Length: 321
Image (cartoon, rainbow, N blue to C red; front, side):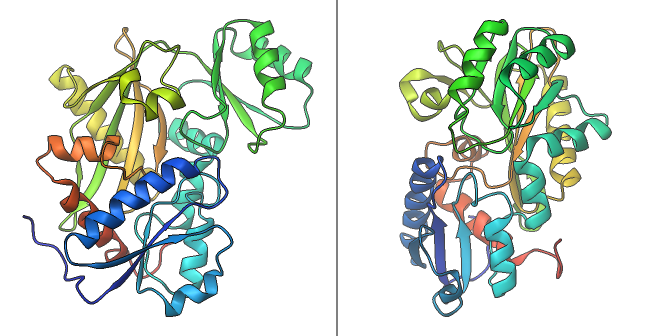
């Protein structure tokens, strides 16, 4: 087992939950991570963020392992609160978390760095459906992919192959918790992801993970139901393609200022194009999740993975924006 820091005297709080639509995934991550810590003899407790008095955490825990997903959990808000309280926490700081969560900001940074990402149009919540559909038709054409500007898990996302389908999707999502959406060019291809993990102070990329599904796209159901997807890790890709994607994953991680652990999502198109879709600065930690699957392919056990993630709370620079 790789050398790790001594965490035996620490009170570890595994923070999860909150009111995000991604709460179920957060619960699964937290329960698995907490168990992995306790079976190694460490002191860990599950702490639900819903209705929590954050100021009480200072007297309750020494370090926070973040298993919080979605709005409020990985967008910099909980990270900022922990910074203010002076509690070490895993993963990225406020800036990287906010950039990674807000897709228009992230994609603008990626495009400025001359890294391929699907073309997109940001939808303002005050614009009428007709105005939005017209703008999409003129700037992107069809088909397109609709997704929340801040959110994950493919929740409230979908493909629109014409103006009528986009109209329906926009109207269906007007009452959802996500108030801002983007529309991307739809690129057929295989979803792929690459984990970035700090091990003994060195950033490394994990084996590439690809997934296929018979559903219309890799949606929430496919992501949470093993019977709805077929996974390959390490991915069956040309060596050159795999090497280039791994290099880009590291570039993206560093570009947004991420720290310690992240997961960078790509599409592998039949044309050979491999655009970056997004970065997850608080990747899921469930035992059957993508990050754990990639770690196993790198001969890193689940328990070792969680300790590596915990280590990231203590390797940040003195000041992280």
